[in-house]
Length: 349
Length: 152
Image (cartoon, rainbow over the protein chains, first blue to last red):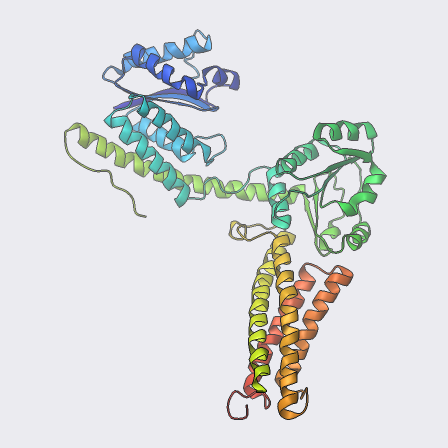
């Protein structure tokens, strides 16, 4: 029966995970060392920025477990890692690997990268001759489970933060954000985060307008944008596609009349306003103007919540698949140990 | 030999109607998606649609390409009518609807170039234009000058 010993973002802080992260080119040496010290017949080592785990098949589990633990402790210069490590064996180890491959155990649930990482970890161990019948079947099965969860459930669909939702909406309006111009009005913290998301999508230029010119300069410098005075910003709005408002003004500063004037100059090109100021900067009536799309913090937050609710529903579905697959694999494993020839069933639903 | 004008009249209009059908179909999707975005509702079901900008451009390009075809298609028809009947235009139902169709798409392009009309309102024009095309096709059945059978 296989077991897994490791740590992940659930149990260990970043600085510890960093110390135990194994670079791909060092994986071979690590496996060799593990094999010598733990005396395990089969080994796979999965190391990503969020987890380092060793899957092993051995006759002497307690011995191997202690050996791997000691190796982890030497690597991280810690006297005891007991509180950060988790250990699963048999069916629980199978379930754990399937959950990991499915993306259920990831920091961002349902992310796709982990499946490729599991595959690489397996291939590296397989190429080095560290795997045998059991881990071969187990890991190949986990890749199948990961794929099945991704095609059968919506786990991982839909963005999860206000910033990424804002980007998603901008893309729904404009398509590619390359060559789109962004203006930040008021240099608040949230505006900065949202702008970062937009710039990650290659939005072109960034204009920062703020009442305090120094703040505008600092923010513009950070993003490689242009700083300007607040009034200048209001005048230049006709030339930008996306405006993020986050001023500390106690009342609305952007009126429907102002936006109507701007839209006349824009010749009907769409304008996307993100109002994350509290209290609001933009008069809600602005949303009624044609080709103008206004989202305030509540609108964005509501979409975030909606997505999260959908995600947790999909997570339940994914967990059920993992559960079924774990049972199926355990059934195969028992039969296999008793020397019975039996195959693993592929679900066709 | 006068029939050659008819052979230009019909295919040109069929091609232009097909392009305008594409414009109207995307127009319908645009209207739905635009409303969803405006009302701050984005459901997973609509997220696979192209962006508003891309759909709007597509509608415009379809109309831009089909407008000359539409114009020449109608002119060839008028020319054929002149050759066979001695007059360009008879204001039978099909002709009337065709004229309205042409007018609507002309207004669409004019407002877009002249006044920057884009988005929902101009997409409604594109839909209205195609609705009139459907009317004119329907009118073919009752149109004295556009019968398929005997009098051609």
